[in-house]
View (cartoon, rainbow, N blue to C red):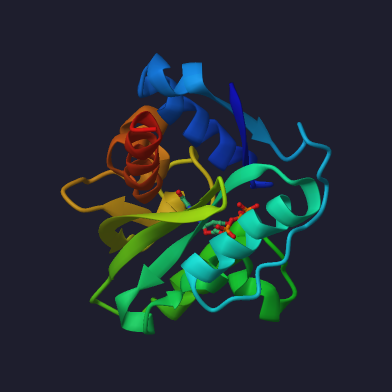
Length: 202
Ligand code: ITT
């Protein structure tokens, strides 16, 4: 069985992707064993210095390939708000870093809500790019989920900006819908299903 590392330190991403892989049936599970960074003893905070999702995902996957010599995939994702010129984008995880908060979801949401306080056009989208490095080749998969930014937090499930993101066609935020319903329509769900469909062809 071929081993592939999922290069993330975000436990919520691991939970979402594990659920998606299970849901996609046994075909991939029989051919591939998905390992986490802790499975391979990688404790590094892998640098993400690119200004694109694709560049950051590649950076994370290449780090694992170079230092641990495993085939690997990585997800880089973020929230793009139209009225803010598609910010926070690649800076989503550290949006409130200029206020002294590192990787702090509550501070990130506070900052976004205050920037949006007087803005009526609240269209936004989550984007995920997955880069897979397999047998010396690179493959890329992308998922987008459109929606709007709520005026206040709704719900306590999920992670990151989930309490303030309402996906298109829904009244509830991602944080109110539960993981299964979120995965069915989310940016990450769409990208992972493409990855799984590709792995099934191998
Ligand atoms: P890794 O780099 O280790 O994978 P990370 O949390 O730093 O973990 P990203 O660099 O991809 O992940 O940053 C994405 C940030 O965007 C994340 O920290 C959240 O704040 C936000 N985000 C991404 N996907 C999200 C989702 O499904 N729901 C809510 N917020 C999300």
